[in-house]
Length: 473
Ligand code: HEM
Image (cartoon, rainbow, N blue to C red; front, side):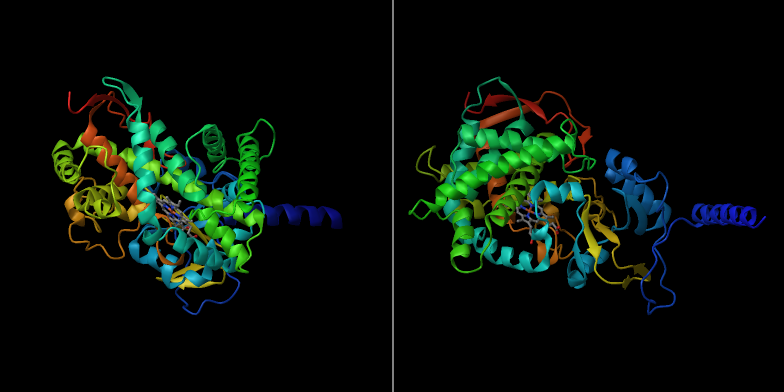
């Protein structure tokens, strides 16, 4: 009788618990009492499909996902993504809070599949390591160092563009991925185009697929194949590190800065050097090529804006002594209108659909509870495309950036202590490519290519195929 009672009571309790969860949704359990009695958990779904939560809906179209959730729950809402409950922030104020004001109470919260693609130890995401990494990479990627790199970037832009033949068709995104990877290889370890760089670019393409994959390491899974590509890249990087240690000549590339830091007692192990380089290579090529393909598409779709860019770039070309004279840092600085086009491109191209963080302690913001351990996603593209922040947000209007009056609302390169270290490099390589493209060629889209491939970065679905004509013919 007793055991019957226990079984019945257990089933009843389990049933009530499930009913409670269904009616109220799973909520975070705060680990301390919050100071503000009225503070509450952000509204939204924190349960639905087990493990997947709302991930499938999110991956299909993150922009629509955010718009729908904002209209249903408000600008701060709860969700369940990548197997974890999270809080999504979609305003510039809340984003500034998490990325800057309260930055010391958060650490990066990238999904495990993403971090394991870069870092076998998991240590480069720790705070101590992070500040040392910034100390070394800051000067290596600073505009002072960049000035000397412009000639290499100029060479590489021409290396690709000079291969284009009249009336040829070309897939812009494919070409740009190679171009930006080659630039990263040159800047990071001084490698010129060749089979070694080509092989690494192929491995990087494979690695990229693992970033948001299911964490299942088998020979045939996306994640497993990506890990093997990572290991292949690690081997090549180790060879480059060993080769550089035997080389007495100064190179002034990022690898030199990292190895010199070793010599100065800052001491990065080879494992760390490899992980830092992989971070740079991935950041350096995927984000930049995705923004550049959008810029080239936006110029195509807005002929009046293209005319203004062309006038600016022709002016810079005409003041050169010869057609082949390379661009300089001063030329890049003079590309003011084209820079505005790039800013407007980054605003409208669904960049940074989420920057993830994890709360280190219990926190409150704007009446909401952020319990220790909860994942927070700052959705930058949500406010880049919000009419409250940018009027008529889907209109492509580079003049918005004429007076640089967007403090704290335009954050393509992030915000706070993890602000992108490669922003000057990224801008230079985009501007230099656009210069040579528009001054040498006219181009026409083969198909409108309006659909979007969302991951790992939003890009035109078919890579924006174009037909090219030399400008002087
Ligand atoms: C248009 C191109 C690019 C965009 C939109 C972009 C965007 C970003 C963003 C949003 C972050 C902050 C991530 C966070 O807070 O968790 C970031 C960080 C970073 N980016 Fe970029 N990036 C670009 C190009 C580059 C390039 C070319 C490099 C270098 C080769 C680079 C290197 C880095 C590094 C090292 C970090 C980590 C900084 C830190 O954790 O302190 N990025 N980037």
